Length: 61
Ligand SMILES: [Zn+2]
Image (cartoon, rainbow, N blue to C red):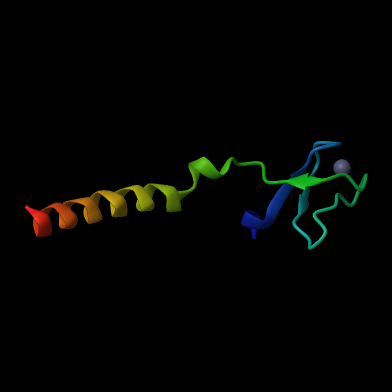
């Protein structure tokens, strides 16, 4: 379940995501190591937007 792996912002160690997002070594804040802008959902959302724009133009032209 690597998608639940998060990185500690204090000691830079990796840990599993938990409800408190606390590092089990130093109690620091766990953060997602990958920025959300690289997610696949964003890519598909962009294509969906283009599709809806084309459909919109067909209806009103
Ligand atoms: Zn830590």
